[in-house]
Amino acid sequence: MSESQFVLRNDWNKIALNQFALIRKVGIKRKFRRKARE
Image (tube, rainbow, N blue to C red; front, side):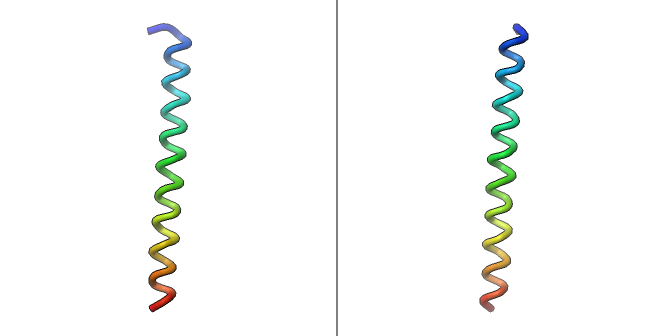
């Protein structure tokens, strides 16, 4: 595997992790909102 391919793959992993973190944050916020309504 060439160095550029490794860097590209690394960038995609970072993007995927960021997306996953955002989804989790949104999910947690929604849970809190539901509790607040009750």
